[in-house]
Image (cartoon, rainbow, N blue to C red; front, side, top):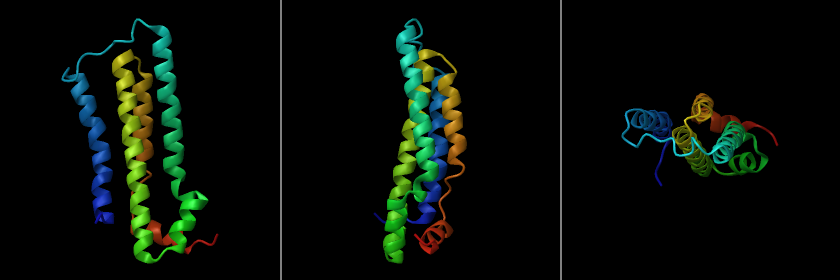
Length: 146
């Protein structure tokens, strides 16, 4: 696993590209036209609620990830190389969770034809803009006292 901060920045832009390409594929009908749950209000409500809750949880955890005591402590106590590996691993987990939630939000939009899925995806994408990886962030985490 020889991923560097530069590779993480590339992955950061891939996290933006995947939902945009997925939304484009949905809009041009490449992935179907959806609306399967449009006539099932209970299922539609449940799907929208799950999408909203998942979006809120992932946004909160993604933005507060390196403020969590266990993760910050692990990065702080490790050597520089191990701290960078730990930082990269947690960023990969963060980007994976964000991408999954955005894909879920877009699927909810496709299945229900309700804009709540689109709004959740947009809000999650906006939160991604605050998750740009950098070496300075590792240094800040390492310099803070417990």
